[in-house]
Length: 178
Image (cartoon, rainbow, N blue to C red; front, top):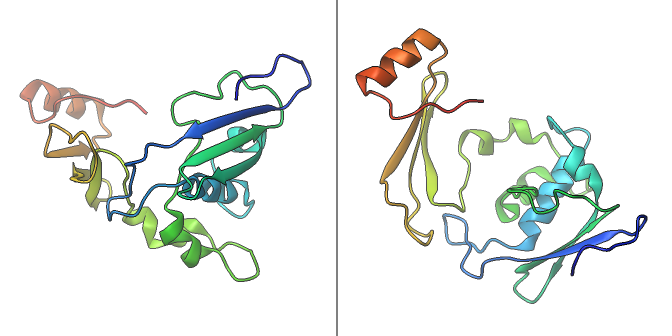
């Protein structure tokens, strides 16, 4: 699965998923998680900031008995097909039953409690969110290799002077720009 050379050819990319990838509760991450996130992205009722990447995708298909292979067909060639996190994923095993109605329509994901208590498949998992103050993540023991930090806290400091003072005082270790 490479990149086609013709100007009007569709592009097909196959992504093998890490065999050990799993959500923090131990449920395997599969191609279905990417496919479900694509469905959510393309649902016009969802509050999506930018659908550009989703609209470029013609289809996504899960392959293999374990569904650990994702095949993405793009409408046309796309230079950034392999950019970091070009395809989002959502825990389909958890969210599909909660927001996808029997008639195929989706409920508003922004109203689901998932936004306040997300699942992780990375080195850290969600611990606590105090709106306007901070979000804390703790090491996800199911992720390999284990993170070297036990915990990460992201503080929200809207004032630049206070941000600089916290940095100089050592109460924060760095600054994230948005």
